[in-house]
Amino acid sequence: MTREDIFARLTDIFRNVFDDDEIVLTDSTTADDIEDWDSLEQINLLVAIEKRFNIKFQLADVSHLENVGAMVDLVARLIA
Image (cartoon, rainbow, N blue to C red):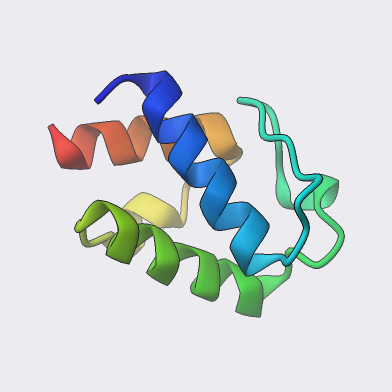
């Protein structure tokens, strides 16, 4: 799966979790860029990503995610 494929799937997930079809993700997108992205939505987001990609995050991995680009890289590593 390419990085672009991961971005496309993550975009769908973000749009569903935040109920906003206007979300456009970039490598530098952070919680500050999405209005309702708080700690509760972070959990919902991570669970949705795990289900969609059939992966399991470790707390140590997700605690250091600074932006969507880092999230894409983590997903890519876990599905490889």
